[in-house]
Amino acid sequence: MNFADSEIVNSILMEHGNHPVDTPEQADIILVNTCSIRDNAEAKIWNRLKFFRSVKRQNRDLTVGVLGCMAERVRERFLEKEKLVDLVVGPDAYREIPNLLAEVEDGRKAVNVILSLEETYADITPVRRGGNGVTAFISIMRGCDNMCSFCVVPFTRGRERSRAMHSIVDELRMLSDQGYREVTLLGQNVNSYNDEGTRFAELMYQASLVDPEMRIRFSTSHPKDFPDELLHVIREQKNLCNYIHIPAQSGNNEVLRRMRRPYTREQYLTLLDRMREIIPGVTLSTDIITGFCGETEQEHQDTLSLMETVRYEMAYLFAYSERERTLAHRKFEDDVPQHLKQQRLQEIIDVQRAGALERNRDEIGRRHLVLAENQSKRSADKLSGRTDTNKVVIFDRKDFKPGDYVEVVIQDATSATLFGEGIQVSSIREFEPEWLQV
Ligand code: SAH
Ligand code: SF4
Image (cartoon, rainbow, N blue to C red; front, side):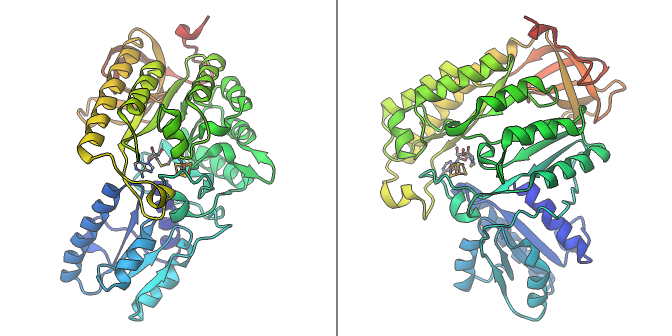
């Protein structure tokens, strides 16, 4: 989401006559987009700001600004005269950046952290610098109203609002014309997308019609309100990817209740069964938090057993990090000791790796349609891409190039990566995976 936001900021800055440079030392303006989701994300930013202060010592005219979720917090410290930054801009005030920069130029410190009920930046065409020209993001919503008790997002990004469907479809069309092959639609909970009554399943259907050779992904879905209709649309439309990120957070009902996640383990598992039943070959991923307030050993074991039951293809696993202003901060005690959080996290990582390795080894011998994205980080002779099901595949470059859909036979697998051989260039419409034929 921050990548997508930075692209909007790029657009606003370039409209106002700025241009990008390659190093901090060459810059007149440095803006850092920030995340508050966990303490370690914030710690990185504070370090980065200290580094920019040293750059500023060499260049007195340099303006340093903080954008995004940390803006509110930086504002506090910055008003307490820490003097790390000249400019603080919250996630709904990016249009104000040119005016705020002018204020800084006049010798004032500039702050705008006001959150909006309407802003979606729908009319701003993001400038996608530094991407691979093959895959792109589009934010379809902003903010969140869910108020999970551990989460700071509703406070840093404000109320939930949806961007108009026609503006999303227009941007998809533009990306298709520019040669992009895959777009991920982003929102904190895409299932609550609502453009004057138009819901997410309809948006996905319309998105699938823009270009049958452009893949569409989405993230994130909240388990509380996943409609069957969306599963059927994904099944029917070949360019809608068979991959769903569906965060559980915990496998224990008491913890889910304390987290304010309004579903039970049983309802969650029923939903996942339905996903696997309706969309053959679908892959699933999750987010899990270990060591949430009051988590007992038994509750932790329930999360391990959930992971063993589901055997997710991918998972994003975190130790609980207390955030100010959240309900958990006000109401519960962050009482699982750090070493125990880490130990439980490691146990969950181990179960996840073992499950993902098994699932990936099942892929050996199968043919997948892989969208080639980049040169592999390890070797110039290899390309890296992803299957429809969002698994990373490394294969010999031969004459293939980024942007090609390549039919690849999988030959080897680790828990995180598949390795295969590219057979031929193919397309979404032509490709039929034989291992999915019943
Ligand atoms: N809107 C998405 C989540 C966005 S935040 C959803 O509801 O699924 C991404 C992930 O960060 C969350 O799913 C959660 O697992 C994790 N997270 C959020 N707050 C956290 C905290 N205080 N400590 C640790 N992890 C957290
Ligand atoms: Fe945070 Fe919950 Fe909203 Fe996700 S749904 S952003 S976890 S409050």
